[in-house]
Image 1 (cartoon, helix red, strand yellow):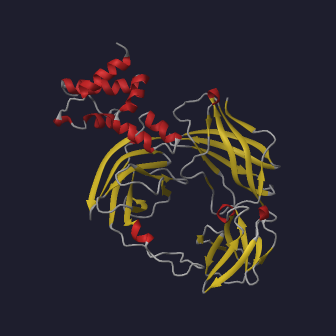
Image 2 (spheres, rainbow, N blue to C red):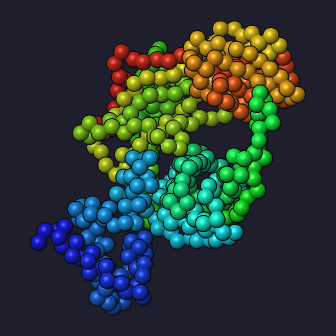
Length: 435
């Protein structure tokens, strides 16, 4: 009998229900590193459970077979948007939780956490027989309800009732705390769709959101067994990209993602807006920029992005790593603002052959419409500036290529793009991290 057959036979034996020990396997997995299993006599069933847990951790074929268990299989399907999280599930880097609340015909259950030093992934499901399209307004706060410096977003905005969904929380300037509060405010999305638009030329930037059906608050506590410390590898190598000096300072490797940290030379003639790259590991395996959550971050004092995120090599334990740069986008320091006369609807030549079609004002709001065929406005426009350089955020964009901003005091404006130069090297630039 081979190991898979032994494992199948063991699963069959474990399939016999024992009510008094319901959930014992899940609890054993979560606390296996801290519990002294030999502190008291074990029943025969507990011995089998222990044998199973050890087998999963020590035997690769059995660990692979665990994906056949329905609960783990569902979680594996829920993380297909992230290669790093898929690796974490495959390596049992998952903290099971059991938090459930119900009110006003809606129930919410928080079931799993994938946490490391810089990121929290929360897996939950929403159920309701009363409402067919529930929308979620999430909030993340400190455990005491105060402000928490982080960014977060739902990984899918259109999930059927009862399906497992997730929220990713990223920390850039601090580590993940020991605990935090998640607030889920739910409203009926169908009611929002029925809200009429009063002015199609100037749709309201804020809509009358339907009242919340229910608000759920969950205190999340992170088991240190499942909160790994990242690995920081110094790089400190400078390369020339498109005539600009860029120094790769270090790389941070976490179970959920990797970060490549950089700094640029003050003598550069352009700010680095974004970087195209991948990480090359042993055997030619590539780790690409993340497809979910944050892809890059920077400081409020700089026009540049100085940290870049990609899939993680944490579980591969690679002996060799390299950064391979395949392109970059820059914002030229000598010309990074584009003048627009709001009265006449005229502008100086815009990047990428983009044309300004019209400008219009209504009360305290301005609308600028562009020809949307060359490049959609949301892909190239960062913000608006006045003559003193004060920043005004764009509070709405539409599919026709229009941007909207308000409370602007002047009749001239300056458009600031994310970037205005795209660069591709003749051959990829390779930076060795580990040799």
